[in-house]
Image 1 (cartoon, one colour):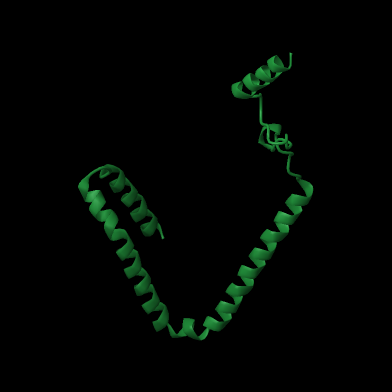
Image 2 (image 1 turned 30 degrees about the vertical axis):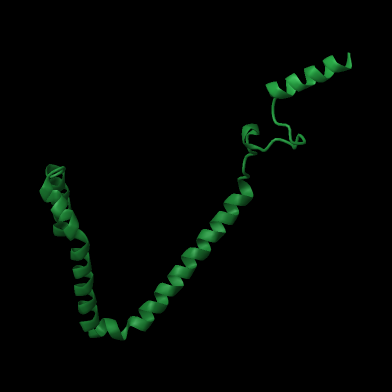
Length: 123
């Protein structure tokens, strides 16, 4: 395990030294195929392990129980948090203003001019 951690930190150090160089870009394109190859090799080793393959139904059942328990616990925690911590009200600036019958804000200059001409004609 210490070898794996050491190799990871060595890779981080080399990555810092190669940052911005063309070799780093070439290596970055190789990461995904290398991970796919490692997963394929892991699948071969798991498939070849007879002990693991015979215990796979028991291990799979335990994994399903663990996953369902984790999801149920997360939902229960969210429900408890929502019950004890209410959401604060929205600030006034974010709420929609009441309907003003099609008028928004101050009257425009054209509506003021038409009102002035109407008042002048009535006098």
